[in-house]
Length: 577
Image (cartoon, rainbow, N blue to C red; front, side, top):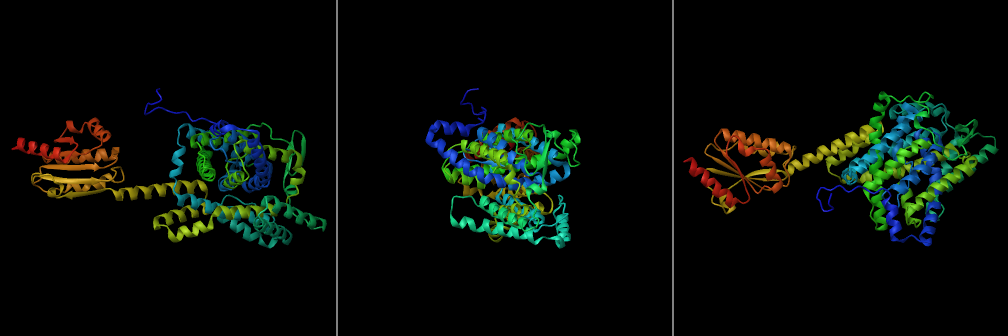
């Protein structure tokens, strides 16, 4: 098709971020910047990836595999130069129930489905639509996610024994309460020491990442307790692995290998059987995963653009995120999306291109292969403390409270409902209801903008005969406002023979409004009353013509100015007499 065709389709270019960086001039100096930034982010990503995988309900290596595989694939195929992708806290609330119901295999299949949806969104060029998700919806479910993440960490932080959390927040609270007598002061001590290090270290303004320092301090504290004969739960004591006849504890010291997602175990420990019932049960969670991944990744890209004065390609970024989530399940990785904190650190560390994200993936790979044994010593209470910090940052408590105090009542209700649904039920319900509520409120507000009023003809500067009633319609005529706007026109005086509708301030007209106008025209036509539309935009006038409204009952015409309407009205009245 010609390039200047108004309806031509421009195919989104996967990897546009990498191409743009290359076109700007990629030199040895910029490569050095990317390598240094990648090293920094890789060090941060190792503990975060493990902690978020455990919070999701899967062994820690699956979070590391996500950072390795998805982090590199998304960087090379996405549309943002600085996004760092991997497991994120936002997905814990969605993924944890999937693991509880369908096991790791179900989670990987849901991730695969979400990846396909993301690619479809990108190819359909729907990336720009994500910006229309209202802020109260986003804030509501992110704050709810923070609360749920913190709740899920309480058993490890307190050292509670025999607590098997499920996908119900209220039930989990009951289980935690019942297990409180089994709390361990040793675990609490390790958690508090780690938490103190995580809170105080950033104030020193050193380049060493706080998560690395916090987990190192927590691991040292746990080691001292172990030397003293006090047992502390660690990654090595919690998790076991088997691979090609070998087995061990903690994290397997191997690079991720290709395995079909359906070969991983379900909730009962056996490989999943792919059938329609499974796909149907995972479709809702997959849609929620795709929507949240799109929102989080594109918001992250917008923030990165603001920090670097660059521009991302939202559709290419969605395709990149989709490809990453399509590939990563075949290597044992879980759902991935862009992580705001890691992206901001990437930028502050001097990154120039997506190569920094690839280096970050290589650093995580090196940690898995060379340091798996050391990572096994990390205590579970220390990881719980790290997730407490992540949950607090994600909750945006200050913004939440400020919005409650200052926002309109309707937005406050959306915020509270999304928050409550996320905490009490799950993200799938929260996202669906939140966006539905926001859409309903938007429709209501837009409908309030649409008004119909009768004008006194002398005020218009046009000398209409007394048998003519002039009405002015202002605002969009769509399904939410059409009936309200047109209802006024049904109560006309008995002496009115012509109704003139001034529609110069109507920017849009949908099918519902067309049906309502046609019904009104028929009613007036049966009473012998003609209708004149004034100032319809060309595309709306074409809709009127295509609908064939002028060929049926009653008189109807479309003119551009009130003066034209006056001449038509006088001619109709003259012919009638």
